[in-house]
Length: 61
Image (cartoon, rainbow, N blue to C red; front, side, top):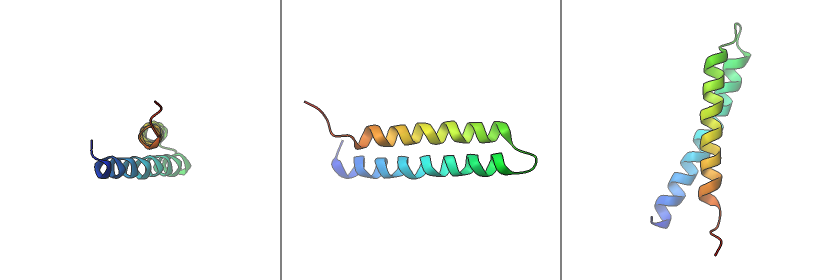
């Protein structure tokens, strides 16, 4: 995988992760709360954040 593509995917994962968590907070704070949507958005956001961290780590040899 080329470096530019890896950087692009990493930035995409970080932005998607933050937006997923922000969406989860907004859905949970509405009245009445949209709990299943908030949980789903939070889980997907967390997965994207973990993927971003995994892609941005330096390889250990």
